[in-house]
Amino acid sequence: MIPQTTVFYLHRRVNPLGWLQAFLESLARYPAGAPYNLVVLAKGGIADGAEAAIEDYRGSDPGGLIDVRMLELPDDGYDIHAYFSGAADVATRYVLFFNSYSRLLGGNWLSAYEAAIAALPKPAMVGASAAYEALDRTTPFPNRHIRSNAMMLERAYWLSLEPPTLEKRACNRFEAGTDGISRRIERAGGGLGILTRAGKLVLPPEWPKVPVYRVDQQQELLVADNRTADFALSSYFRRRKLARLAWGTARGVKPSRWPAWLAERRAWKEGRWPGNP
Image (cartoon, rainbow, N blue to C red; front, side, top):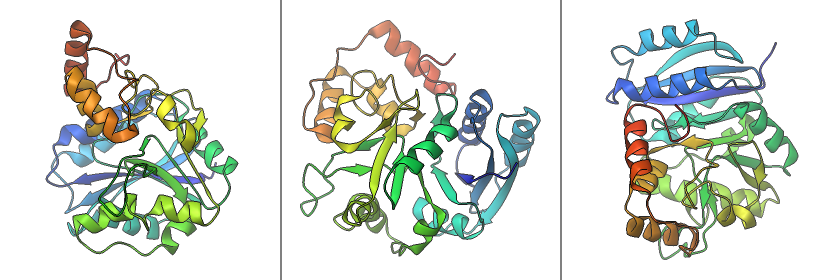
């Protein structure tokens, strides 16, 4: 079976090995629902233990995996630059990028991504979380954009874009600025969407209403990362602040449930997530 999608995971040499292991364990736990190739972007070189972790993952016979390999890259620039290098090295129709903190939380994730991007007008981008958060004075609220932690695009469209310069601020503007990728897609008449854990496609007007990113307990989140963990594990008052930044309102934030909060904190540190034993 020939996959339509190459899945990329960014693992810098200086990252803890546990981040890579947690991501691979989530892939092994949740079948993709569609065939895929996996490329681990070894930014800065291959870290100690990374090859063994990948062999353990390959041996777990994860559902949907066709091939897995590592691609060594220099430790220049940021995540976005590694994604451009990775996309130029493959030939699949779609590319799906996961950052170093990413952990999947539900099954049939790839089949949902592929169905969602096929349903949207082109050019299209599908993610696992999004926000209306302002970037700076030139991009005030509401500044709707898909977060780059778990985004899928057509490879040809991605490679048609001009990469940002090698500064963090340039990468932020590429993701969420006035000429960022979400704005470009909308100006071109394309479509944006995020996925729930159940695989439902959610369009921009509905983003603040679904418990995916900084809403309620984020119980429909498909891909966890450091930002979603920060929200889940913060105090009630800090979660209200984060929700207002993302959506302009904290109405969807509920008080902390202390036993559950402690369990969630332990789960995240152990590479798991709430509701995912």
